[in-house]
Image 1 (cartoon, rainbow, N blue to C red):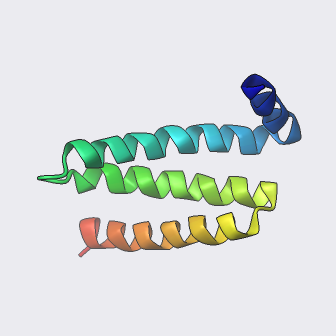
Image 2 (image 1 turned 90 degrees about the vertical axis):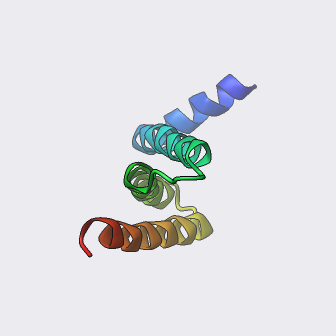
Image 3 (image 1 turned 180 degrees about the vertical axis):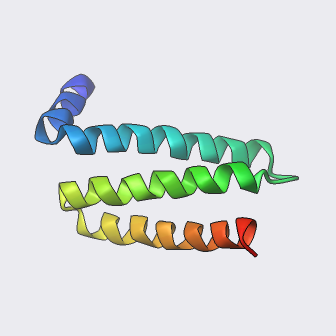
Length: 90
């Protein structure tokens, strides 16, 4: 049943499927890094991962026409872009 779910997801949109796959790897990695470094957060590592994952989330949710998920992912892109500016440019 789970395998069929992923096969159907791929069949409906291979591009969205691969965006979601890479997005998941990036966001899970960022979350793990944040969790493991919580006492001295590795922001220069996990913020870029969150930003890239969120951008891919916007792409895949637009392809899938998932309205509220687009809003959520776009919000994360905006917030992580602000964090990147503060970390690397200011």
